[in-house]
Image (tube, rainbow, N blue to C red; front, side):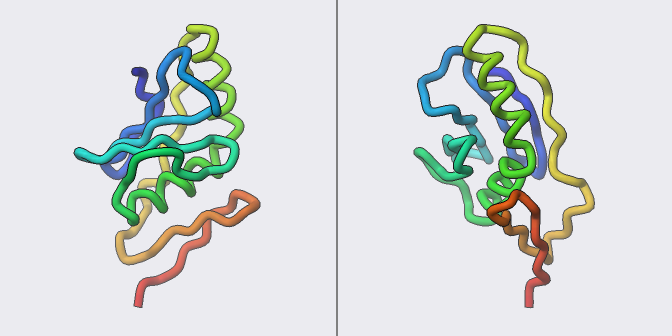
Length: 109
């Protein structure tokens, strides 16, 4: 299973010729979740909530690139790497994805 991105200990990968709907695999330690690309929701599995928020924000930002990779994977073609979330992330903030794909940062109190 090719890895297409890594950030904050999360590994993002896709299988070649995987079943529909278009999705990717996100793993963090022993946890793994399948994420629907078009809707940015968990299809199966689980991740810690702090990591899931990051994955869903990343998926919203990179939806078009993820769909391109999905189509490549269906044809057994090489997958393109996708940029990780910015390394300026600070653990004292929460990241939320908005419906339009923007990331919103809120300070923890």
